[in-house]
Length: 147
Image (tube, rainbow, N blue to C red):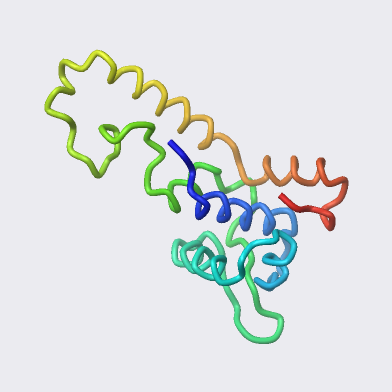
């Protein structure tokens, strides 16, 4: 399993919004500049995050993006599953794929199911607040943050 740039960048946007969490909207240009990511690509990602109600958008003067919930109410797994579709390490565990005809006798399937459980438990139990706290600690202050 490899997390795509869409998943990584969505997580970076969400962490940036968590680090700077307030009632104020943060302009996409600020996020793009601070994170050194393409504004055009972030527009696609923020549209996806907004459509899923993970963030809210406001246009015009003072507009931008902000979280819809407190950072501790988001899991990293939730964000990555939205962008990636699945975090399954093998295609036979992908919920959109029919189980393999050999699944009942597959001796490696328990390995992949166990790995999927470890991945999901790890990411589902890590909150956006946890990652934001680490980002702030590494930067020394939130204004110097850059993932």
